Length: 310
Image (spheres, one colour):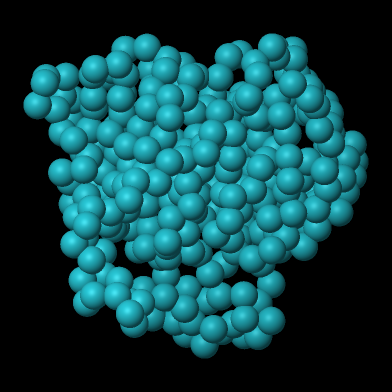
C-alpha cells in the first residue's frame, strides 16, 4: 500500500527501523554492452491460479515506481537510498523477502506525523535465531535479504551496477557516475522495478528547531526551514532512546514547501526515556515507491541536516 507523505495514518531501517545503508558490491559499466537488468532478474514466476498452466514462462512484468510516494512502513520490504554525503553520493539498499513483523498501524497520527509503539499483546517465548517476536507475542520468521539483489544506477547512457554482497546481502557503494539526476533499475526475487529519473533535492535554508520542556520531558518540537524545491519532502525519524532498544518511534513528513512542522507531547514523551530524547535531525528527500507482490519498495534521494534545538 503506497502512502503519500502528507497522509501519515500508515506512515513511512536502521535507526529504530534502520538506517538504510549498504556496503560492497559496486561495479561501473559505461560500455555499450552494459548490464541490462532484464538479463539478471529471473525470467519466470510460478502462477498458482488453478486455471492457469503450471508455469508461466513469459517475462516478468516491469513495475514502474511512482514518484513522490513512499511506503507505509508496515508494508515495506525494501529501501533503496541515494544520499549526498557532502563528499559524494552513496547508494545503499536492503531488499528483504517479507514485511517486518514489528511494524503495524500507528498508535497516534497528526497531519505531519505518526507515532508507532511496539508493545506486544503477550510475552514472547524464546525465539530462534532467524525469528522475531511480533506484536502479538508470537515468534515469527524474520525478514531476510535477497541474495540476488541488484540496483543499476543510470545517468544518460552510463550505468553503474551494484550487486548484493555475498556475505551480508546488502547492496551499495560510492556512486561514480557524474551528475545529479539518475534513473534506477531494481531487481530481486523475480521482480524488476524501473524508477523514473530522480534529481537531487536542493538545499534547505534557514533551518531552525525549538524544543519545549527539555530533552528529558519534551512537550513540543518545532522545526522550520525555507526552500524553493517543488516535489520534495522534509522528513524526520525520531527513535526511542537507544537504552530502551525497542522499535518505538515517531516519523514526520511534509512537502518541503510547507516550511515547518510540529511534533506534539504525546508523540515525544514515550521516546524520552532513560537519557532523554534522541532527535536525529531532518532529511530533505525526493521519494519514489513501488508496490510488488511481496510488499512495497521505497526509493529516496536525500541530504541530511543536523538541527540544533533551542
